Length: 252
Ligand code: BEZ
Image 1 (cartoon, rainbow, N blue to C red):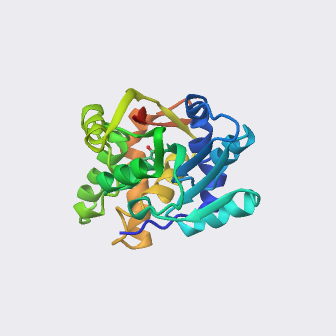
Image 2: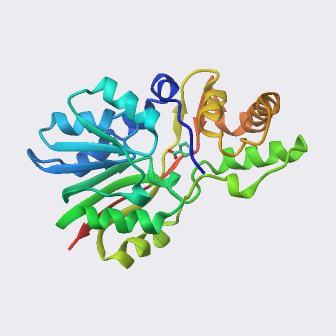
């Protein structure tokens, strides 16, 4: 299944994705002239940040719309539309970086294997993704809304992979990585404005609701707001229940 991304909506209302990713760049600690690949780079903000530190960086994303957005913003940086499950790079990198992208990739074993192959010996894979428990309230509300509105829930339309720490660590070790650091932590994430949850749902719940009409989708958004208000809305602020899995793995 292909996810269709709206790059301008992403930049207008969801730029917290790259803002929160900022400290992940510190963990990557890019060195001058190092070659770095950003997997799932979106509209390229973190690629730009890494490039500004003097590394030779390129970004890939499966969404052509995101890559067009990235190229327009940062014309001096190399971006390619490329799916990490069929990654084919002509050279190996000192580091592979990824923020808030891996959980969209269902064929995770292939992705990890491809990233391993794309790294030089001694290279590092530094990433953060949604981990076990991520947005569990929002997922619950989406399912419950469909049930209450008597709309069908189609399991294979669930687009995300939120692994436990143990599960992901073994996947990394199975392909040959040495896991230097791995952590799963809660990171409550403020959503912009009174319509924050509504906008989040419009942007990110497309796959799950793809079989429904626009009117039915609006009913779901309203129902989710009603169900989630007691839990995720405080002082005029929506806060999404994000849990992040962050790690550094080395190709020894
Ligand atoms: C995340 O970054 O955790 C995420 C974003 C959108 C949908 C699902 C998860």
